[in-house]
Length: 317
Figure (cartoon, rainbow, N blue to C red):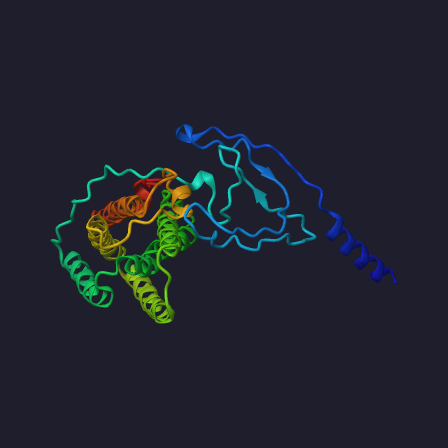
């Protein structure tokens, strides 16, 4: 009888404990643009987003409803600077940024050592079947390749993390930098999914390619981090080339320059009337930054040093 009462009290508390806590949080705006003073915590009601500025429903935020929990963990409701609700649950306003479009897109690391040449020609070989499969379907190409591009940063960050634990030492910020790269590449994927939808055989291809690449890169990073980072540097150089070709197709009218997805406008702080061309521009700039970071990481290893000895370029966009 006592156990039944206890259970009844717990269930009643889980259901009725829905009072709202609204602590206001004010953080200094970084660069004058990140105003979090309107952050509030309150429970979410059932919502259905029927549209967005990109003309499509908000992916991942449809049909959200309150999840009742005894533990009192409340969903976070955040508002933008203009007072409108922040609709994305998988990234926050303080994770957004304006991309540096002035970065040099032509920089190239000339392979000189055996490992460099192996990394360079491995990437060149991998490009051949990609060109054959996608040809000039750059929307699908971008979407599919980002499913692979987000893997190296996650593996590198994971292995550096484990090394830091084993050796009881700090990482110089490289864990965060590499995971930041992986997350940025994943956001590219989330964006291009609003532009091109994968069909069943493309999804099957992703499962196969990602499974092979994940294990191969994991093994390669264990054997030689300098080779792994160099290869990613060359992969990013190829990504820059692919997005440049994407821009040419847009400029020539072969691909429709549709309005930018809402997720892209919020993530890269684009103008409200931004187009697909603007999105490709900022994504290409991201790839150039990833190119620099990975070639830099490889150079550190080539000089007989460890990543922790050089401060990581966290937030290098």
